[in-house]
Each structure stands twice: as structure tokens, then as C-alpha cells.
Image (cartoon, rainbow, N blue to C red; front, side, top):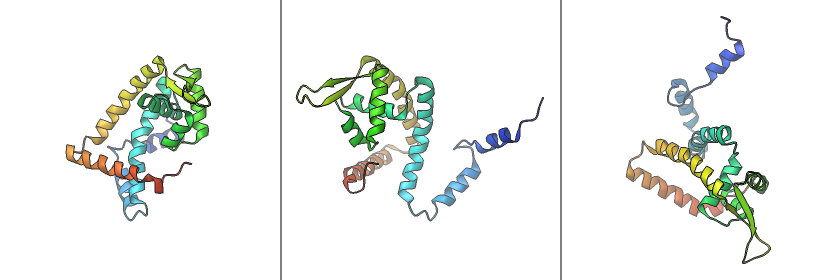
Length: 178
């Protein structure tokens, strides 16, 4: 049996699991201490560990990109949106949303129609196939959120949602599209 290469050894040593790596916890604590952006860093940390593995799995299993998922998610929450509206409510660049819309149309997961009220406006809708894949993917997002929030009791969850809602309601002063 051959010895693993140095690169293989380094790769194995640098891969860690959040709940099992004491050194990682110590490094994270050091980063959080006296952090000049304590709220933003914590929000980003939680979001990255929530969405990263889900997106990776979704890309591998369903061949769907994050922007495609964002469009499909939005259309399953609110039908008859256009690409500009999706870009506005997600803060995602118009170019990535437009590309996602084209890809989803090719995959026959969404359709584009002329708005009956405004013939200049093109609205998007999820197809039956788009709704089906959305539901299949959504299950893993829901499960992961449940796992993420399991450490909070009902009142803490209510408070967290209230604080997030307040930040969102007052986002006009800081939320800028990029």
C-alpha cells in the first residue's frame, strides 16, 4: 500500500466538521473577540454554514445553481414576478438573475408570459416541473433550518424572527444592490 501524497495529507487535515474541531472553535472565538463587525460577521457565519452545503448538494444532485434556486424560490412564494423584481427583492445582480431565468427556461422549470395588464412586462411562473423540483430541494433547506434553530426555544425563535424582521423593515438605509 502506498503512502498518501503530501497534498492528500494536507487536504485531509484542512477539512473539518464544525461540531468536531476544537481548534476551529478557538480560532473562531479569537476572530469574534474585538471584531469590528460583530453582527455582520455572525450573520454571515450562520448564513454560510446554512446555505453552503445545501447549494453544493443541490448543484450536484439537481444540476441547479444558486441563482436558479433563488429565482425558483421567489416564484414559488410569489407568482408572476419579473426578473427585475426578483433582483430587487434578493439584492442579486440583474445579470445573474437573467442568466438563471434563461437556464430555468431551457430546463422547462419556468415559463415567461406577457403580463395581461401591461403588455410591455414579461412575467415568470414556475411550471409543474419547476414546482416539483422546488419541493424536492426545499425539504433539505427546511431540515437544515430546523437543525440550525434547534438550540433555541420557542421564545428565542420568536425574538430572533422579530429582530431579523426589524432589520429587514429598516433595510432601506443600508441594503444596496451589488
